[in-house]
Length: 144
Image (tube, rainbow, N blue to C red; front, side):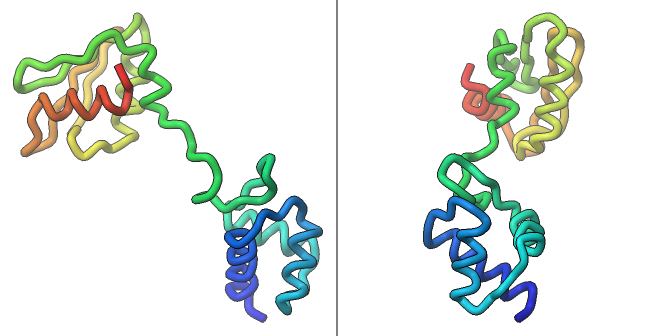
């Protein structure tokens, strides 16, 4: 029994049914021919990035998606507009650098970069992308 085979078995079980505890998962693995210790199973679950939720253990694709930081910061955005070349985002006082950092981290294909002040962000559209398209993408992600 290889580590890869055992982890594939864990993945298959978690995709097939809800598993509430590690002990239940150990029993199911043993029935499938993979006897493991609790410590090994814990390491396998961590490696697979499985999370325990109110429904039991779930793999990342089955767990609730992580919140979008841009969406969460949308409440700090007062307006998003453009002049045909450059996009300007007005924010509440002091929020521009955090929002610009989140925009840069998101690596949106429409955005080449940002420059932030205290309450204003200049957003440079990527080559071949119109400023209007950037505004539309940002509004959709931030729901402003």
